[in-house]
Length: 121
Image (cartoon, one colour):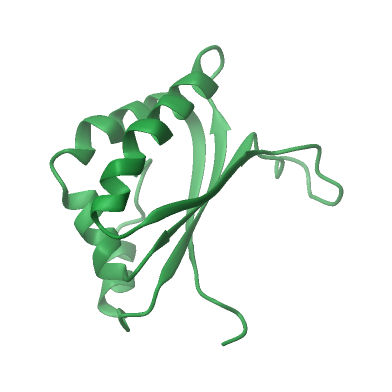
């Protein structure tokens, strides 16, 4: 992860209800090769995510914001679905993921990782 907020991952995992979870990724690319590095990261991460039951549900470029405060425009977004919080934890603990995560970090100057759950159940 870019920089995890201390204690948040543990609190997030402690609330595991075995329900699927989606991770919203808001992405700001590093100048130069950031976008290309992130695309490479997605390609390499997809099979590892799948190994843990997850899937990249959507990844796309951010277009000009129609309504936003200054600084809230993002270069891209990605939505990654996991079968549970434990599956996400298994992914980030997977030793095959660490070198690929380094590629993600090199690709970004700013990122938000926001877990989301269905609003309507």
